[in-house]
Image (cartoon, rainbow, N blue to C red; front, side, top):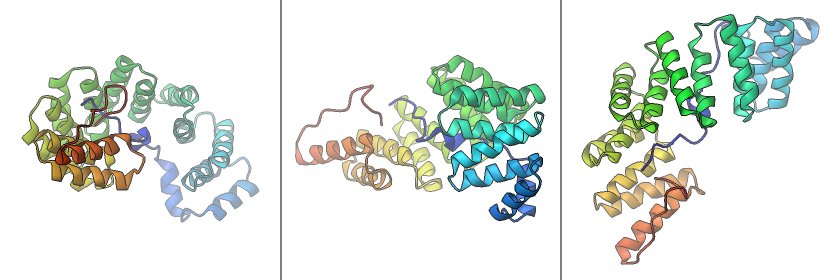
Length: 277
């Protein structure tokens, strides 16, 4: 099994906050208040930013983009506006535009670890794993206690075959954040890849307990149990993954495979490139 990126890389995005979200709480996160402020004070870059963030949270991505673009036009040096606009572009798959926003953040503040982290995510999505590693390292250098940055670095190290350092980083993440489902999940993935099935099961059970909505964790735990010959238990976790993501090919194949084994029917495992456990 290869390292899986969680469905929707946005799970590990570090949203820009700072002043913007403090004000959001002060204004009770009211779209009507933000909208009114933007209308009566069109040059209010903070109101434009807050309204953009609020609209994004409501799923109005076009409206969010309009207001965040207006915010950076009004205040070209306002980091939170650039960061949130980058998040929005990244969410929409516009990676070139997102990268430009994060680089603008770094122009304004070279020590912003969030921008480095998100540039790492973009590099990963574009297949530049070396560049992604460099950006994740920089992010962690700027914020050594950030468990999300540490998990991202550990994950990319594992993808690049640097298992020993990957394990060290992920283990450190579990110390910093014992409730990090992602850290436990990727440690379990490393264990499974190295054939340490007992350790893999323990860590993946921890990941599932911390995040029961993770289909990836359910599937990887099921695969470990399947490899251990515990087909009924494996089938149960494949079933849980299918309830979470009915169209998940890995869960569907796993369910068919375990059912076939218990009934004496052979099912060809999915080949590399066709899907993953």
